[in-house]
Image (tube, rainbow, N blue to C red; front, side):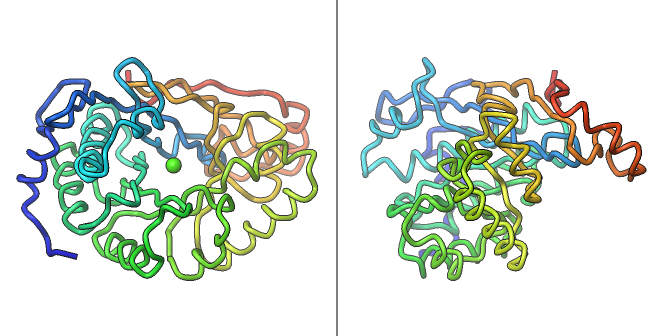
Length: 300
Ligand SMILES: [Ca+2]
């Protein structure tokens, strides 16, 4: 790692100014134009949006993989920087709740100077009015992740500087438990492959139940992603998970915060957040399992 770097130079290299009000990011020297979509992460028991994951999109809505396929190895570092800054700038304009988290995907191969990268991100966050503890960096658990020792050091340095770290796509790779042993993320996101149709799959239930117990013992917060149905999320809620992401709750929307569906919990704690209900009140709440409530995003 090469020290702490001049953030302003990196920002200019990324082709993005903090004051820029343009909806698009441009990687200098190329015609790659991109923007960000935001997908909600719902905190069920609080009955609110916990945060949003920022997802890169093309100017005409092209997928992240389509955009990434056009990024060369030489421009990956700049692209990673530009994505972070663009996500932070947009979140600064869109977020209204000072506790809302912004979750940003780290491009594993791009993090060759992670501390300098983070300083650029933190400076962007300050300019955008976001605190470091509102920012989550998601490290993917695929073969593309850097050497575990290097990744562990990156995540450690990030935590030291006050941001949160998440291990993404957990369970999709071949060494998930080893990664969990060597890395110390604040959060783990269970891969959607383990979530799909979990309500009718006892093997997936057993595996996810074990992950719930494991992360609880390690003091790690769990997010279930890729939820597409009420059955899936009811099953996961019964296992003790309370942070959810997926189309069932809200699809990513480009340049704005989408409408979010926040269901009532089986325990009947929502919408009276923070208050315990009597057993009879909870029982009365049970027939309304299918009731859902749409809430407006925290911005106009
Ligand atoms: Ca992710």
